[in-house]
Length: 639
Image 1: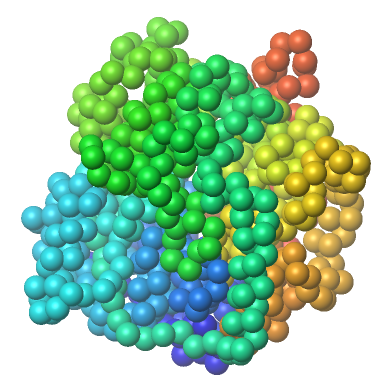
Image 2: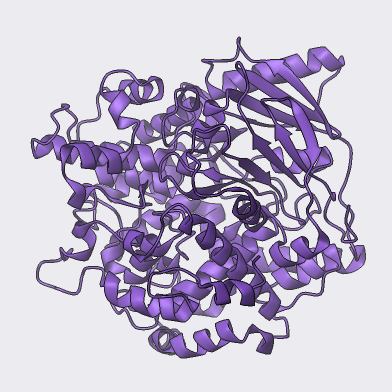
């Protein structure tokens, strides 16, 4: 149990081989250091994985973790995390999800669920108020995601004689067939990256449902309620979270990316797509958007509803539009909406699917692997996706991802991944800080785990995207900030509020231009804050998270402690991945991005990775091998 509010005080280790559940010791000291969510999961993996395990081994763990703010009414606090050894990268990884499972897992009385072993046959697990029931999933095996979830709801309602309010996570055919980038779905939301769905499939685990009637307590209800009100007002008045995201969703970034040369095009050969207007957020809003939607407790409501076959479904996010748009030279918006729906139904990550497809198109063009897949030709791709999910024909090889395909057929220089994970839609040669983030990110080519520096380099502020100056230190602090935000269970879009609104509303003003010019020179100051976070023993309205955690849990929290928690999270994840062979040698990008300028007339339009990496490691206090030393881990209290 726990003396802190916001938590349920219970973590369960479920051995699905033995069908046995037992309490996992997680102390209040652990809660103070790791808060919850991804950081909590990383520490559990650090304590239990030796470095010898493989993703599909029964000994591999799945950790589903919530944050203390989930279920408390805090703005945008419905996220939960799924972490495990990734079959795509071979190292530990995580996938964040906005579905309702985390909310109901806490209502069932759990802060986190750890899964070990392998079910003897296809199985789904029911959790109700801390009790576990195992059910035969033979009839569910082979079903797509929505069909599975409908069948689960029907089974629960019949068994309990009433309509059961619950949360679910489930996999589709891609997870069952061990596609290395299969996702886990909760409602229409995806824990999409790193192949968590395939780990579920390897354990013969089709789905988990959670239900219950417990409610997390709040330490100071009056202060928390007043803080929520102010925070929601700030979110709704900010130009990004109150205007752009509600109006256009993440798709609204397509046009900005085009302007700044950041839109992945033709397998990252270019940063601008001639047909971008047809797949932009503006086109989506005008032509197909039926309504806005959002996750539980979120005032931003950035999700879109679009028609597919006459029914409203979740619309595509920016990554899907960019990667199934310009990156394969496709300007058919309705087709992208259909593919987005089909891939969710199959339980397959749209980012890695699209990245692997783009590599295959270029490999076909260069004669390395003749598949008939061609840039700009989209006929039959729905069948290709089905074939990947069921591992039929060329789909069996495409299911392995671009890294493994390039190792077999050649073309490593244009296999756009880091550590085996395909990159997001931001072409980094015009945003070199984002390029650094992709390379050093613990889980591979992730824009968020990489610090999302592109928001400084053109998509929010307008810092010089070509200069490496200051980018290493800024990358580090942005990574730590995002780690810390995720711990509480909150959406990372709330971090947009960190950037003062006046800089965004008047980007061409003298003040905004001055700030953008100065930011690259702030590296030394950022490094001092990283080494001595105790000096930030205060709170600021632009960073409301520490106050929220204090009012909800009763922990004493300030900016310095908050950032230190994020740093600890990033380091413990790096430390466990070191056991699986990660080092500076793995922090790399394909030569297309580091050696070939995007604009041949401008040699600096490439990512000067090695230069920035050295500075980054020094900023983090890591060794030259790209790893935290034992001294560093002790200083952070990681044992």
